[in-house]
Structure formats: C-alpha cells, structure tokens
Image (cartoon, rainbow, N blue to C red):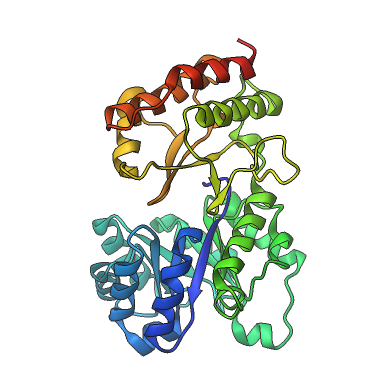
Length: 357
C-alpha cells in the first residue's frame, strides 16, 4: 500500500468538453482521474477514451457502479482505456466474480463501491474470499446534502477494512479542510471533485490538496521503517539524496514547485520520498528501467508522472548508508547511460558528507 494516499479527481460533469479541459491542466497534480457516474451516463465510453488520450500517464477509473453483467461492462471499460472499474456493493456475487475475472485477464482492478451497503463487514468478508482487494468508502451526494457528517464510526469501519487487507478509497465531498479528518488511517486514495473543478483556479486547488495530503501522510509510518534504521537515519539519508541530486544538477520538485532548499523556512519535502524532474531528453520509463537494471527491482525508486521520478532511501532493503550511495550512483549512471551526463562524483561526495562517511 502506498504510504501517501493517491489523489483521485472525480470528473463529475454531464458534458465531455469541460471534463477534458480541466483534466488536461490538472493531470500533473492528480494520480487517478475518475470518469464520474454522471459523465459515464452522459458521454459513455467516449469519456474514457478522451481522458485517456489527453492524460496518458494517469490512472483512469470508470465509475460504472456496475449492478449486473460484470464481465461485459469490465471489458467495455478496459477496452476503452480504463485501469479501474467500480461494481456497486449490492450487485450479486456472480456479477462481482465475473467482473473480477475479466479484470484479472486484463491486468486491471475492480473496486467495490459501498454506496447503500449497510452491513459492510459481512459483505467485505465474502468479497475478500473471491479476491476483491479494493473498496470505495462513499458518503453520497444526497447524504452530504442531508448534512450527513463524517464520524468516528466511519474511521472505525475504514480501519477494519484495511485490517482485513483491503485498499480503501474515501470519497464524499472531500475538501482541503476535511481531508485531515482521515490522516490517522492509511487510506490508499482520497477523491475530490467539486473542490477542484468548481474552484476559481483548478490547478492551484489540485496543488493545494496534493500538498496537504503529502504533508499529513508524508512522514514514514512504522511499517515502512527498516529494522536497521530509525527516523533520524532516514531523514539524514533523504537529505543526502536531495543534496547529492542537486549537485548532479537535477531539479527537485513537489507538485511542480521548484525546491527552495532543505534549510529554507518554506521547504516542502515531507518524509523521505524525493521527487525529481526528469531531464528533457530522457523518457521517465526508460530511466526507471535503467536504474532497475543496475540495482534490481526496488520500491526505493519509481515513476511519479511523465515528468518526474522519485528516490526513497527508506525503502532500501537492509537499509545502510552504503545502500543510499548505491541508489544515488545507480541514478547517475542510468542517466549517463541514456545520454544525459551528470557530475556523479560531486553528487556522491556531497551525499557522503551529509551521511558522515
């Protein structure tokens, strides 16, 4: 499960052009675009195809809330370009299983949408047995309009689902002000719609919400800490990575903002994950592949979006300062191998100085 929840933007429009317009400008700041149920009904599969065309690097969820013929609707969604599809919680188990079977064939995922489900945990046990891994915990529009507030009962239920092994997405009128209510639990994604698309500046709103999520969930949780280290070790390692990367003339970023420096009052780094702009002449997927060929598969590096990748020393197996330097060196060597020369010696020397080597 991702340490920092993904930001999902619900495109709850009833016509396609405004949805495409706002998706195209917010894509760098969003992880998942949701083709909202109203838009699915209004524009059909063309909505999925159109968003996929303008946002090739984002995940796309088709919020079909499928009640029947699960296999067929899953096939339609995935053929159109969706990565994820919802099935309504009241659907027969046969529908759930057929949708899941199709998703597995495509390498995609099915999410159970809990709108209207009263006895969530008993149903969840059945869904878990057939292989469902992801839930959408939903406070509906009508409930919100009826002044239904989030409560401790919601948190308790979400936490029980997570303890059962589910990834959980939370949705229901979330705003930058209400998101902190959920910071005590490791949710997988948070959905917001109107808070972005109804804002005067949707891009600024998306950046603000993304930054809030990073700030609230950014510090490493105990399950992400290696027995070989502690928070201080990881903080120093992250600083070594950031300073080393800067010496290699690479640019750090959070939500598209330029780095003000580790010691600046407005420094934006949270936790140990560092996002780095990919040089203009390099494809991010090629870079990730090159790093993997040098040091093998690892959660210590990965893709942020089409323009950035990340390094996270807290994810190094058998954490050590040597591993931190190896991660930095692999990044520099991968870039050089792809035709972008960096001052790797200066980067490593600076990182070693920060680490006290």
